[in-house]
Image 1: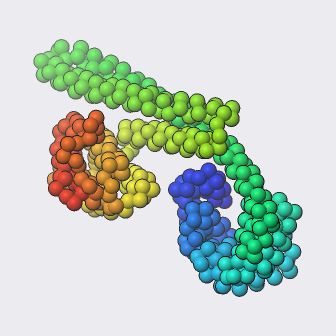
Image 2 (image 1 turned 90 degrees about the horizontal axis):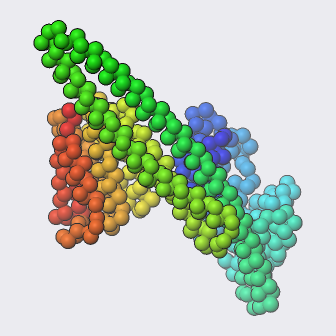
Length: 471
């Protein structure tokens, strides 16, 4: 499935959260279609993702789920490489004896099937478990055999592991010359793997940045088209206003009606023009600067002026800038799209943003909303103000609160929408933060739509309460 391939690509690029979303989506589709092979691939992808992050227990769980899915197609033994993954996770969790028993069985099976890559992997697993259980001579035997096979099959990561195991096994039996030799081999292989991974990541990020730039250009063009349509609509409205003004000269009542209508349209036009100007300025300043940053950094990386460590730092900056640009564009388009005037759409946006910023920062989230909000319509100005106040509040918590738990609650109070954001952090310092604009900006946005905002720092933590009109 294409979704699984996208997840694998994002995993290799280090975008773990995006990779997890792709694998979860692929798993849901495969389960609905009863596609057991795709289910196994999605579970394996989640296992690889957690393995790459050092989460051995969770990785073992997903590999086991993959084996259960594969059995429907490949029989009771499932796929050999997935069984080897399970055995490796058992070893990583410290049960070396159980891992050794399973590794011996899998080694015999791989040998019978004559699968060189899996023979090498099972030999390395046997070497690792034997070394961990105090049998360095046997570990050296299996490690040397696995090392030869990995060289023959061009398995660089496994070859690096074999060299490290041989260095440790020889050191255990005090064969210092051999241990030193394999340590040098392992170091050389590590440098090679790092260089290859860096080149792949640079190529992937350059492609991703190009795709993001194209998406942003398309969205900007769509926005310009939308603004042009709005301008044409305003021109048409002005024409009708002029016609009404001419017809209103026949009677005072019609003239008064025409005047009221003109003032209403004029006020709406000024509001929309101010909104377009603000959105255009935000997109020009923020998205434009991000695209310039990505372009400059990708040029410097392509010319190869930096060491691998510096390259990695710049790659992370480029990736983060691309994501910020996409989020900024998405927020701008969403904030003016009339299709999202419902409170249900607003709740989805608020919930998605919270899950994007809080769990990666190590914060737990409790998100609650009144059921009555599902059928409520939220005016454009209120929706914009609430969303940007909410984003600023979560940003402040992540950056300054040193909290562990965040509670978000949305309630309907008559013709007002009430938002409460509370954390268990250190509260707001009495002197405030020098130069900080977060709290003044939230008060300004609240006042602009005729709402009210309060901060309670009596502890523990800080509570933000915002009430905005739904008229």
